[in-house]
Length: 103
Length: 395
Ligand SMILES: Cc1cc2nc3c(=O)[nH]c(=O)nc-3n(C[C@H](O)[C@H](O)[C@H](O)COP(=O)(O)OP(=O)(O)OC[C@H]3O[C@@H](n4cnc5c(N)ncnc54)[C@H](O)[C@@H]3O)c2cc1C
Image (tube, rainbow over all chains, first blue to last red; front, top):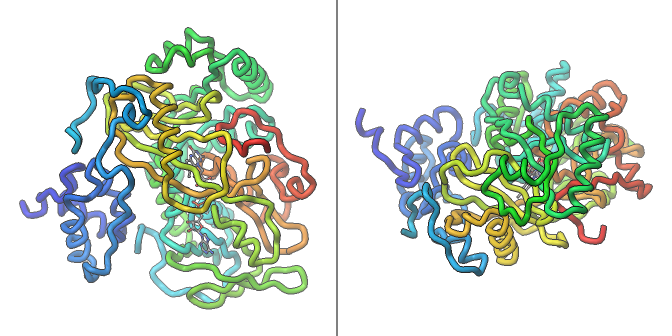
Protein backbone atom coordinates (compact mmCIF):
# COMPACT_ATOMS: atom_id res chain seq x y z
CA UNK A 1 0.00 0.00 0.00
CA UNK A 2 1.60 3.15 -1.22
CA UNK A 3 -0.46 5.47 0.99
CA UNK A 4 1.33 4.14 4.04
CA UNK A 5 4.65 5.15 2.52
CA UNK A 6 3.75 8.84 2.58
CA UNK A 7 6.45 10.64 4.53
CA UNK A 8 5.04 12.87 7.26
CA UNK A 9 8.26 13.95 8.96
CA UNK A 10 10.73 15.02 6.31
CA UNK A 11 13.66 15.45 8.70
CA UNK A 12 13.59 11.85 9.92
CA UNK A 13 11.73 10.06 7.09
CA UNK A 14 8.84 9.03 9.33
CA UNK A 15 5.95 7.58 7.28
CA UNK A 16 2.27 6.98 8.00
CA UNK A 17 3.17 3.29 8.32
CA UNK A 18 5.77 4.15 10.97
CA UNK A 19 3.14 6.00 13.01
CA UNK A 20 0.68 3.12 12.58
CA UNK A 21 3.28 0.63 13.65
CA UNK A 22 4.25 2.68 16.71
CA UNK A 23 0.61 2.95 17.79
CA UNK A 24 -0.10 -0.73 17.20
CA UNK A 25 2.96 -1.65 19.30
CA UNK A 26 1.65 0.51 22.13
CA UNK A 27 3.41 3.87 21.69
CA UNK A 28 0.29 5.99 21.26
CA UNK A 29 1.16 9.26 23.03
CA UNK A 30 2.77 12.17 21.10
CA UNK A 31 5.71 12.20 23.54
CA UNK A 32 6.43 8.50 23.25
CA UNK A 33 5.83 8.46 19.48
CA UNK A 34 8.44 11.21 19.29
CA UNK A 35 10.85 9.02 21.21
CA UNK A 36 10.02 5.85 19.27
CA UNK A 37 10.02 7.26 15.72
CA UNK A 38 12.28 10.34 16.14
CA UNK A 39 9.56 12.54 14.61
CA UNK A 40 9.82 16.04 16.17
CA UNK A 41 13.52 15.40 16.81
CA UNK A 42 14.96 16.56 13.51
CA UNK A 43 16.23 20.01 12.60
CA UNK A 44 12.69 21.44 12.30
CA UNK A 45 11.43 19.79 15.51
CA UNK A 46 8.02 19.25 13.99
CA UNK A 47 7.44 22.75 12.67
CA UNK A 48 6.72 21.33 9.23
CA UNK A 49 4.83 18.22 10.24
CA UNK A 50 3.24 18.36 13.68
CA UNK A 51 -0.32 18.75 12.40
CA UNK A 52 0.07 15.83 10.01
CA UNK A 53 1.61 13.64 12.70
CA UNK A 54 -0.96 14.47 15.36
CA UNK A 55 -3.71 13.77 12.81
CA UNK A 56 -2.16 10.41 11.97
CA UNK A 57 -2.01 9.54 15.67
CA UNK A 58 -5.62 10.62 16.12
CA UNK A 59 -6.75 8.60 13.10
CA UNK A 60 -5.14 5.47 14.49
CA UNK A 61 -6.09 5.90 18.18
CA UNK A 62 -9.51 7.50 17.79
CA UNK A 63 -8.41 10.47 19.91
CA UNK A 64 -9.66 13.96 19.14
CA UNK A 65 -6.74 15.61 17.27
CA UNK A 66 -7.25 18.87 19.13
CA UNK A 67 -6.74 17.02 22.44
CA UNK A 68 -3.22 15.93 21.44
CA UNK A 69 -0.46 18.24 22.56
CA UNK A 70 2.58 18.65 20.40
CA UNK A 71 5.84 17.79 22.25
CA UNK A 72 7.71 20.85 23.47
CA UNK A 73 9.91 22.32 20.76
CA UNK A 74 13.30 22.93 22.35
CA UNK A 75 15.55 25.89 21.74
CA UNK A 76 16.99 26.87 19.32
CA UNK A 77 14.11 27.61 16.93
CA UNK A 78 16.49 26.98 14.04
CA UNK A 79 19.70 24.95 14.23
CA UNK A 80 22.62 27.21 15.18
CA UNK A 81 26.34 26.50 14.85
CA UNK A 82 27.99 25.86 18.21
CA UNK A 83 30.81 28.24 17.27
CA UNK A 84 28.32 31.11 17.12
CA UNK A 85 26.84 30.23 20.50
CA UNK A 86 30.32 29.92 21.94
CA UNK A 87 30.98 33.48 20.87
CA UNK A 88 33.90 32.72 18.58
CA UNK A 89 34.29 32.89 14.83
CA UNK A 90 32.16 30.28 13.07
CA UNK A 91 34.40 27.71 11.48
CA UNK A 92 33.64 26.00 8.18
CA UNK A 93 31.37 22.98 8.50
CA UNK A 94 33.49 19.84 8.75
CA UNK A 95 33.17 17.20 6.04
CA UNK A 96 30.24 14.95 6.86
CA UNK A 97 28.14 17.62 8.54
CA UNK A 98 24.59 16.94 7.41
CA UNK A 99 22.26 19.40 5.74
CA UNK A 100 19.86 21.16 8.04
CA UNK A 101 17.21 23.84 8.01
CA UNK A 102 19.84 26.54 8.33
CA UNK A 103 21.54 25.85 5.07
CA UNK B 1 -1.13 3.22 26.65
CA UNK B 2 1.88 5.53 26.22
CA UNK B 3 4.34 2.64 25.99
CA UNK B 4 3.95 -1.12 25.61
CA UNK B 5 3.51 -2.94 28.89
CA UNK B 6 1.69 -0.30 30.90
CA UNK B 7 -1.47 -1.39 32.70
CA UNK B 8 -4.76 -0.96 30.86
CA UNK B 9 -7.03 -1.72 33.78
CA UNK B 10 -7.86 0.22 36.93
CA UNK B 11 -5.88 0.36 40.15
CA UNK B 12 -6.44 -2.40 42.67
CA UNK B 13 -7.12 -1.42 46.25
CA UNK B 14 -4.22 -3.45 47.65
CA UNK B 15 -0.68 -4.26 46.55
CA UNK B 16 2.26 -5.89 48.28
CA UNK B 17 4.67 -3.24 47.00
CA UNK B 18 3.98 0.25 45.62
CA UNK B 19 6.83 1.98 43.80
CA UNK B 20 6.42 5.74 43.38
CA UNK B 21 8.00 6.84 40.08
CA UNK B 22 8.24 5.09 36.71
CA UNK B 23 11.73 6.17 35.74
CA UNK B 24 14.47 3.65 35.09
CA UNK B 25 15.03 3.22 38.83
CA UNK B 26 11.44 2.40 39.73
CA UNK B 27 11.01 0.14 36.71
CA UNK B 28 14.28 -1.74 37.22
CA UNK B 29 13.38 -2.30 40.86
CA UNK B 30 9.90 -3.56 39.92
CA UNK B 31 11.42 -5.96 37.40
CA UNK B 32 13.95 -7.27 39.93
CA UNK B 33 11.34 -7.72 42.68
CA UNK B 34 9.17 -9.71 40.29
CA UNK B 35 12.21 -11.73 39.18
CA UNK B 36 12.65 -12.72 42.84
CA UNK B 37 9.11 -14.05 42.82
CA UNK B 38 7.31 -11.20 44.56
CA UNK B 39 3.77 -10.61 43.30
CA UNK B 40 1.29 -7.75 43.42
CA UNK B 41 3.77 -5.00 42.64
CA UNK B 42 2.72 -1.73 41.09
CA UNK B 43 4.62 1.27 39.78
CA UNK B 44 2.73 4.57 39.94
CA UNK B 45 3.94 7.19 37.49
CA UNK B 46 2.64 10.76 37.43
CA UNK B 47 3.32 11.15 33.70
CA UNK B 48 4.40 8.55 31.15
CA UNK B 49 7.23 6.15 32.07
CA UNK B 50 10.55 7.79 31.29
CA UNK B 51 9.21 11.37 31.30
CA UNK B 52 11.64 12.35 34.08
CA UNK B 53 15.44 12.37 34.02
CA UNK B 54 15.47 8.81 32.69
CA UNK B 55 14.41 10.08 29.27
CA UNK B 56 16.59 13.20 29.36
CA UNK B 57 20.04 12.01 30.37
CA UNK B 58 23.43 11.72 28.72
CA UNK B 59 23.17 7.90 28.53
CA UNK B 60 26.71 7.24 29.73
CA UNK B 61 27.75 4.08 31.54
CA UNK B 62 31.00 3.56 33.46
CA UNK B 63 32.33 2.15 36.69
CA UNK B 64 35.69 3.95 36.54
CA UNK B 65 35.06 6.06 39.64
CA UNK B 66 37.63 6.93 42.28
CA UNK B 67 36.09 5.62 45.51
CA UNK B 68 35.70 1.99 46.51
CA UNK B 69 31.98 2.57 47.17
CA UNK B 70 31.22 4.01 43.75
CA UNK B 71 33.59 1.82 41.74
CA UNK B 72 32.40 -1.50 43.18
CA UNK B 73 28.70 -0.66 43.03
CA UNK B 74 28.84 0.74 39.49
CA UNK B 75 30.99 -2.15 38.32
CA UNK B 76 28.23 -4.54 39.38
CA UNK B 77 25.92 -2.40 37.24
CA UNK B 78 28.28 -2.28 34.26
CA UNK B 79 28.46 -6.06 34.26
CA UNK B 80 24.67 -6.21 34.06
CA UNK B 81 24.55 -3.71 31.18
CA UNK B 82 26.55 -6.08 28.97
CA UNK B 83 23.80 -8.68 28.86
CA UNK B 84 20.82 -6.50 29.60
CA UNK B 85 19.33 -6.61 26.09
CA UNK B 86 19.34 -10.40 26.13
CA UNK B 87 18.05 -10.61 29.68
CA UNK B 88 15.17 -8.19 29.11
CA UNK B 89 14.40 -9.36 25.58
CA UNK B 90 14.63 -5.85 24.13
CA UNK B 91 17.57 -4.04 22.58
CA UNK B 92 18.72 -1.29 24.96
CA UNK B 93 21.47 -0.41 22.46
CA UNK B 94 24.26 -0.74 25.00
CA UNK B 95 27.42 0.18 23.07
CA UNK B 96 30.65 -0.66 24.89
CA UNK B 97 32.62 1.85 22.83
CA UNK B 98 34.87 2.63 25.81
CA UNK B 99 34.79 5.40 28.41
CA UNK B 100 37.53 7.95 28.90
CA UNK B 101 37.87 10.07 32.04
CA UNK B 102 39.98 12.84 30.56
CA UNK B 103 42.69 14.61 32.52
CA UNK B 104 43.85 17.97 31.21
CA UNK B 105 46.36 18.97 33.88
CA UNK B 106 49.14 17.25 35.76
CA UNK B 107 47.08 17.38 38.94
CA UNK B 108 44.16 15.66 37.21
CA UNK B 109 46.47 13.06 35.73
CA UNK B 110 47.86 12.34 39.19
CA UNK B 111 44.30 11.89 40.42
CA UNK B 112 43.67 9.48 37.53
CA UNK B 113 46.79 7.53 38.43
CA UNK B 114 45.34 7.08 41.90
CA UNK B 115 42.00 5.83 40.52
CA UNK B 116 43.67 3.42 38.12
CA UNK B 117 45.73 1.87 40.92
CA UNK B 118 42.60 1.41 43.00
CA UNK B 119 40.77 -0.10 40.02
CA UNK B 120 43.51 -2.71 39.72
CA UNK B 121 43.08 -3.63 43.37
CA UNK B 122 39.31 -3.87 42.96
CA UNK B 123 39.49 -5.99 39.81
CA UNK B 124 38.09 -3.32 37.47
CA UNK B 125 39.45 -3.34 33.94
CA UNK B 126 40.82 0.16 33.29
CA UNK B 127 44.06 1.61 31.95
CA UNK B 128 45.96 4.77 32.76
CA UNK B 129 46.69 6.53 29.45
CA UNK B 130 49.26 9.20 28.70
CA UNK B 131 48.71 12.15 26.39
CA UNK B 132 49.85 10.32 23.25
CA UNK B 133 47.57 7.37 23.85
CA UNK B 134 44.58 9.63 24.46
CA UNK B 135 45.28 11.55 21.27
CA UNK B 136 45.30 8.26 19.38
CA UNK B 137 42.09 7.11 21.01
CA UNK B 138 40.28 10.40 20.42
CA UNK B 139 42.05 12.43 17.75
CA UNK B 140 39.20 14.99 17.64
CA UNK B 141 40.10 16.30 21.10
CA UNK B 142 41.92 19.58 21.47
CA UNK B 143 45.51 18.49 22.26
CA UNK B 144 45.84 21.38 24.72
CA UNK B 145 43.27 19.66 26.92
CA UNK B 146 44.87 16.24 26.74
CA UNK B 147 47.25 15.27 29.53
CA UNK B 148 46.05 11.67 29.77
CA UNK B 149 43.26 9.87 31.53
CA UNK B 150 41.70 6.68 32.77
CA UNK B 151 40.23 4.51 30.04
CA UNK B 152 37.63 1.82 30.63
CA UNK B 153 37.38 -0.26 27.44
CA UNK B 154 34.04 -1.88 28.28
CA UNK B 155 32.26 1.28 29.42
CA UNK B 156 30.16 3.22 26.95
CA UNK B 157 26.55 4.24 26.51
CA UNK B 158 23.07 2.85 25.98
CA UNK B 159 19.81 4.33 24.71
CA UNK B 160 17.93 5.90 27.59
CA UNK B 161 14.38 5.44 26.23
CA UNK B 162 15.06 1.88 25.11
CA UNK B 163 16.29 0.96 28.60
CA UNK B 164 13.12 2.38 30.18
CA UNK B 165 10.90 0.52 27.71
CA UNK B 166 12.87 -2.69 28.16
CA UNK B 167 12.45 -2.69 31.93
CA UNK B 168 8.77 -1.71 31.71
CA UNK B 169 7.97 -4.56 29.31
CA UNK B 170 10.02 -7.13 31.20
CA UNK B 171 8.35 -6.11 34.48
CA UNK B 172 4.89 -6.23 32.90
CA UNK B 173 5.56 -9.71 31.51
CA UNK B 174 6.14 -10.85 35.08
CA UNK B 175 2.87 -9.34 36.24
CA UNK B 176 3.97 -5.90 37.50
CA UNK B 177 1.31 -3.22 36.94
CA UNK B 178 2.79 0.03 35.64
CA UNK B 179 0.16 2.76 35.93
CA UNK B 180 0.90 5.92 33.93
CA UNK B 181 -0.74 9.29 34.65
CA UNK B 182 -1.21 8.32 38.31
CA UNK B 183 0.29 10.70 40.83
CA UNK B 184 0.90 9.80 44.45
CA UNK B 185 -0.50 12.59 46.62
CA UNK B 186 -0.02 11.20 50.13
CA UNK B 187 1.45 8.35 52.14
CA UNK B 188 -0.46 6.90 55.10
CA UNK B 189 1.56 5.72 58.09
CA UNK B 190 0.71 4.67 61.60
CA UNK B 191 2.85 3.68 64.56
CA UNK B 192 6.09 3.78 62.56
CA UNK B 193 4.91 1.73 59.61
CA UNK B 194 3.58 2.34 56.14
CA UNK B 195 -0.11 1.60 55.52
CA UNK B 196 -0.77 2.88 52.03
CA UNK B 197 -0.72 5.71 49.51
CA UNK B 198 -3.24 8.20 48.22
CA UNK B 199 -3.25 8.84 44.49
CA UNK B 200 -5.06 10.97 41.93
CA UNK B 201 -6.98 7.75 41.14
CA UNK B 202 -7.91 6.67 44.65
CA UNK B 203 -6.47 5.10 47.80
CA UNK B 204 -4.26 2.00 47.91
CA UNK B 205 -3.29 -0.15 50.89
CA UNK B 206 0.23 -1.55 50.93
CA UNK B 207 2.84 -2.51 53.53
CA UNK B 208 5.78 -1.41 51.33
CA UNK B 209 6.31 1.93 49.56
CA UNK B 210 9.46 2.77 47.61
CA UNK B 211 10.33 6.38 46.84
CA UNK B 212 11.81 6.37 43.32
CA UNK B 213 10.43 9.78 42.40
CA UNK B 214 13.67 11.23 40.97
CA UNK B 215 13.63 15.03 41.06
CA UNK B 216 10.53 14.87 43.30
CA UNK B 217 11.89 12.33 45.78
CA UNK B 218 12.13 14.82 48.62
CA UNK B 219 8.45 15.77 48.22
CA UNK B 220 7.42 12.11 48.22
CA UNK B 221 9.52 11.32 51.31
CA UNK B 222 7.96 14.36 52.93
CA UNK B 223 4.52 12.80 52.39
CA UNK B 224 5.68 9.98 54.66
CA UNK B 225 7.06 12.44 57.20
CA UNK B 226 10.65 11.51 56.32
CA UNK B 227 12.95 14.52 55.90
CA UNK B 228 15.26 13.81 52.97
CA UNK B 229 18.46 15.89 53.04
CA UNK B 230 18.55 16.58 49.30
CA UNK B 231 18.29 19.54 46.95
CA UNK B 232 16.76 19.60 43.49
CA UNK B 233 18.93 20.65 40.58
CA UNK B 234 18.60 21.05 36.89
CA UNK B 235 21.04 19.36 34.53
CA UNK B 236 21.11 20.55 30.93
CA UNK B 237 22.14 18.79 27.75
CA UNK B 238 22.42 19.39 24.03
CA UNK B 239 22.31 17.38 20.84
CA UNK B 240 23.84 18.34 17.51
CA UNK B 241 23.04 17.34 13.97
CA UNK B 242 24.39 13.95 12.86
CA UNK B 243 28.01 13.82 11.77
CA UNK B 244 30.29 11.22 10.28
CA UNK B 245 31.98 9.25 13.10
CA UNK B 246 34.57 11.41 14.88
CA UNK B 247 34.49 10.23 18.51
CA UNK B 248 34.39 6.60 19.54
CA UNK B 249 34.50 6.50 23.34
CA UNK B 250 32.14 8.17 25.76
CA UNK B 251 34.00 10.75 27.75
CA UNK B 252 33.95 12.85 30.87
CA UNK B 253 36.27 15.81 31.30
CA UNK B 254 37.40 16.54 34.84
CA UNK B 255 38.77 19.90 33.78
CA UNK B 256 35.71 21.32 32.03
CA UNK B 257 33.11 19.42 34.11
CA UNK B 258 31.43 17.92 31.09
CA UNK B 259 30.53 14.65 29.44
CA UNK B 260 29.57 13.63 25.94
CA UNK B 261 29.40 10.84 23.39
CA UNK B 262 28.68 10.48 19.71
CA UNK B 263 25.50 8.44 19.33
CA UNK B 264 25.18 5.57 16.89
CA UNK B 265 23.06 7.99 14.82
CA UNK B 266 26.04 10.35 14.65
CA UNK B 267 24.86 13.17 16.90
CA UNK B 268 26.98 14.56 19.69
CA UNK B 269 25.00 14.42 22.95
CA UNK B 270 26.46 15.95 26.06
CA UNK B 271 26.20 18.30 28.96
CA UNK B 272 28.39 20.44 31.17
CA UNK B 273 28.19 21.78 34.67
CA UNK B 274 29.26 25.11 36.00
CA UNK B 275 31.13 25.46 39.24
CA UNK B 276 27.98 25.92 41.21
CA UNK B 277 24.95 23.74 40.66
CA UNK B 278 22.09 26.01 41.63
CA UNK B 279 18.88 24.58 43.02
CA UNK B 280 16.22 24.65 40.28
CA UNK B 281 13.13 22.74 39.33
CA UNK B 282 12.40 24.25 35.90
CA UNK B 283 12.58 21.98 32.88
CA UNK B 284 13.64 24.81 30.61
CA UNK B 285 17.24 25.10 29.56
CA UNK B 286 19.01 28.32 30.51
CA UNK B 287 20.96 30.66 28.27
CA UNK B 288 23.86 30.47 30.71
CA UNK B 289 23.86 26.70 30.49
CA UNK B 290 23.70 26.78 26.71
CA UNK B 291 26.61 29.16 26.43
CA UNK B 292 28.65 27.09 28.86
CA UNK B 293 28.04 23.94 26.84
CA UNK B 294 28.78 25.62 23.51
CA UNK B 295 32.02 27.15 24.78
CA UNK B 296 33.28 24.00 26.48
CA UNK B 297 32.43 21.57 23.70
CA UNK B 298 33.94 23.82 21.04
CA UNK B 299 37.05 24.11 23.18
CA UNK B 300 37.19 20.36 23.79
CA UNK B 301 36.46 19.36 20.18
CA UNK B 302 37.33 22.34 17.98
CA UNK B 303 35.63 20.95 14.86
CA UNK B 304 32.28 21.32 16.63
CA UNK B 305 32.44 25.08 16.04
CA UNK B 306 30.96 24.49 12.60
CA UNK B 307 28.37 21.98 13.72
CA UNK B 308 24.75 22.87 14.29
CA UNK B 309 23.03 22.49 17.62
CA UNK B 310 19.56 20.96 17.16
CA UNK B 311 18.08 20.92 20.64
CA UNK B 312 18.84 21.95 24.20
CA UNK B 313 16.87 20.58 27.13
CA UNK B 314 16.98 20.00 30.87
CA UNK B 315 16.04 17.42 33.44
CA UNK B 316 15.89 17.53 37.21
CA UNK B 317 17.65 15.41 39.79
CA UNK B 318 17.36 15.50 43.56
CA UNK B 319 20.86 15.25 44.96
CA UNK B 320 22.57 14.59 48.27
CA UNK B 321 25.52 16.48 49.76
CA UNK B 322 27.99 13.83 48.53
CA UNK B 323 26.21 13.33 45.18
CA UNK B 324 25.82 9.62 45.92
CA UNK B 325 22.39 7.97 45.88
CA UNK B 326 20.25 7.08 48.89
CA UNK B 327 19.34 3.42 48.80
CA UNK B 328 17.66 1.24 51.36
CA UNK B 329 15.30 1.30 54.33
CA UNK B 330 14.49 4.22 56.60
CA UNK B 331 15.10 3.08 60.18
CA UNK B 332 12.17 4.88 61.80
CA UNK B 333 9.52 3.93 59.23
CA UNK B 334 8.96 0.25 58.55
CA UNK B 335 8.04 -0.53 54.97
CA UNK B 336 9.43 2.71 53.51
CA UNK B 337 12.42 2.40 51.17
CA UNK B 338 14.48 5.01 49.34
CA UNK B 339 15.77 4.68 45.78
CA UNK B 340 16.67 8.28 45.11
CA UNK B 341 19.33 10.98 45.23
CA UNK B 342 20.50 9.81 41.83
CA UNK B 343 22.87 11.79 39.65
CA UNK B 344 24.27 8.73 37.87
CA UNK B 345 21.02 6.85 38.09
CA UNK B 346 20.87 5.68 34.51
CA UNK B 347 24.09 3.68 34.64
CA UNK B 348 23.34 2.60 38.20
CA UNK B 349 19.86 1.22 37.59
CA UNK B 350 20.62 -2.45 36.85
CA UNK B 351 22.60 -2.94 40.07
CA UNK B 352 20.40 -0.70 42.21
CA UNK B 353 17.30 -2.57 41.09
CA UNK B 354 18.64 -5.99 41.93
CA UNK B 355 20.39 -5.06 45.19
CA UNK B 356 17.49 -3.02 46.55
CA UNK B 357 15.09 -5.82 45.56
CA UNK B 358 17.25 -8.14 47.64
CA UNK B 359 17.12 -5.71 50.59
CA UNK B 360 13.31 -5.43 50.38
CA UNK B 361 12.76 -9.16 49.87
CA UNK B 362 15.27 -10.53 52.39
CA UNK B 363 15.35 -7.73 54.95
CA UNK B 364 19.16 -7.62 54.69
CA UNK B 365 20.88 -4.73 52.95
CA UNK B 366 23.55 -6.12 50.59
CA UNK B 367 27.10 -4.95 51.24
CA UNK B 368 27.43 -3.12 47.90
CA UNK B 369 24.61 -0.70 48.69
CA UNK B 370 25.05 -0.47 52.47
CA UNK B 371 27.30 2.64 52.16
CA UNK B 372 24.47 4.51 50.42
CA UNK B 373 22.17 4.55 53.46
CA UNK B 374 20.22 7.57 54.65
CA UNK B 375 22.07 7.24 57.97
CA UNK B 376 25.32 8.38 56.36
CA UNK B 377 23.67 11.63 55.33
CA UNK B 378 22.16 12.15 58.76
CA UNK B 379 25.55 11.57 60.37
CA UNK B 380 27.35 13.75 57.81
CA UNK B 381 29.52 10.75 57.05
CA UNK B 382 29.88 11.49 53.35
CA UNK B 383 31.34 9.27 50.66
CA UNK B 384 34.34 10.90 49.02
CA UNK B 385 34.26 10.51 45.26
CA UNK B 386 36.59 12.65 43.18
CA UNK B 387 35.97 11.65 39.56
CA UNK B 388 32.57 13.31 39.15
CA UNK B 389 31.83 15.92 36.54
CA UNK B 390 28.93 17.40 38.47
CA UNK B 391 29.58 19.56 41.48
CA UNK B 392 27.74 21.31 44.27
CA UNK B 393 30.36 24.02 44.37
CA UNK B 394 31.82 24.20 47.86
CA UNK B 395 30.11 21.04 49.14
C1 LIG C 1 20.89 16.22 31.38
C2 LIG C 1 21.12 14.98 32.21
C3 LIG C 1 22.21 14.14 31.93
C4 LIG C 1 22.44 12.98 32.67
N1 LIG C 1 23.44 12.13 32.29
C5 LIG C 1 23.55 10.91 32.89
C6 LIG C 1 24.46 9.94 32.40
O1 LIG C 1 25.16 10.16 31.40
N2 LIG C 1 24.52 8.74 33.03
C7 LIG C 1 23.76 8.47 34.14
O2 LIG C 1 23.87 7.38 34.68
N3 LIG C 1 22.88 9.37 34.61
C8 LIG C 1 22.74 10.58 34.01
N4 LIG C 1 21.82 11.48 34.46
C9 LIG C 1 21.04 11.17 35.67
C10 LIG C 1 19.94 10.17 35.40
O3 LIG C 1 19.13 10.61 34.33
C11 LIG C 1 19.09 10.00 36.64
O4 LIG C 1 19.90 9.78 37.77
C12 LIG C 1 18.13 8.82 36.48
O5 LIG C 1 17.35 8.94 35.31
C13 LIG C 1 17.24 8.73 37.69
O6 LIG C 1 16.21 7.80 37.44
P1 LIG C 1 14.95 7.82 38.36
O7 LIG C 1 14.07 6.72 37.89
O8 LIG C 1 15.36 7.84 39.78
O9 LIG C 1 14.30 9.27 38.12
P2 LIG C 1 13.31 9.82 36.98
O10 LIG C 1 13.58 9.27 35.67
O11 LIG C 1 13.28 11.30 37.13
O12 LIG C 1 11.92 9.20 37.41
C14 LIG C 1 11.17 9.65 38.50
C15 LIG C 1 9.72 9.56 38.09
O13 LIG C 1 8.91 9.80 39.21
C16 LIG C 1 7.74 10.43 38.75
N5 LIG C 1 7.11 11.07 39.91
C17 LIG C 1 7.56 12.14 40.60
N6 LIG C 1 6.71 12.44 41.60
C18 LIG C 1 5.71 11.51 41.55
C19 LIG C 1 4.53 11.29 42.32
N7 LIG C 1 4.20 12.07 43.34
N8 LIG C 1 3.73 10.25 41.97
C20 LIG C 1 4.05 9.44 40.92
N9 LIG C 1 5.15 9.63 40.16
C21 LIG C 1 5.97 10.65 40.47
C22 LIG C 1 8.23 11.39 37.69
O14 LIG C 1 7.19 11.72 36.79
C23 LIG C 1 9.35 10.60 37.05
O15 LIG C 1 8.95 9.93 35.87
C24 LIG C 1 21.59 12.66 33.76
C25 LIG C 1 20.49 13.49 34.04
C26 LIG C 1 20.24 14.63 33.28
C27 LIG C 1 19.04 15.47 33.58
